[in-house]
Image (cartoon, rainbow, N blue to C red):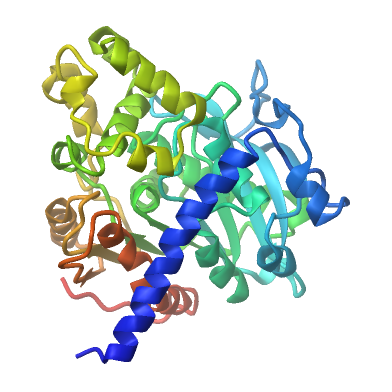
Length: 424
């Protein structure tokens, strides 16, 4: 039974996480047009330099020949907060990847390598960031460069442990954004290819034979498991050791329905935008009313996580559409295609965890996913964290901190090739 002091410490840490999200959204709004200079400039200058629009994120008209994970361009940057600046050398990279339709696409990411030591000896963690938002200012690599990524403390802990970290922006973050939020067929390759790009970036000095793990929470937890499902066929050369995935939205339909008209409804709207950006046949605009078209334009122009919570939370989808896409056959086909666990291909140990009362990512579908993986023979450890009585958003965020120590132990054990236990 937790002591009053331990409960207070955990509550304090959750308050810090919530405060970081609010600060991140505020900072990203106040610096929406800024981009970092190369690392040779001072940290203060790197956080405040204005370069609108940033052509670094604009894909070339014709992709150069190459393989998924090949670096198209890169630049060294100074993160906007002192801890990651002190811990790691950092680059932004554009690399070749593969979209949900199997076509080559450019994507961007951040590569962070701990200072000192021999980079070639370092394991590599592909960290899938959670929901940031559809606007260009919400791009994870831009938020890292500005010191505004709310999950930076998780990345810092992995850097302190000696791991190089690759953080994808996923597909579609550019000055005129067309993000692919919640499309697992895009998220998995983007995360895998961010790791490949980190290993192929000459300045980083990482080894192509480095042990690799995928880790993430919420959208990022989904990305980590999608990467695990893709890896055996898509990237068999990766020395994948394990996966840590929390708050996973494995079944889009089962996650979407409870969000409608509730605190997380803005995340539902964003998921519909992401699917529509990916699949031309969905034609979201055809079912939007004037308010819906204004909502989409507003989110893509400037919406990050805070706006989705505060501005579009507790709004019914019916206020924005003439008919619901949630039950339309074309949409249902794409939801189904982007459901985790349908193909038994994960070959490495998995730590999966979830909040018991999660208002943003429905917990029962995550439980069903873990049972499906167990039935497929995946060596999986399943953990839950009691969030009874916590307010929405806070209940979803609690496991990020609560599971961190276990997640770090799990990564260390996988990189040390210790046998994994399963509680299937």
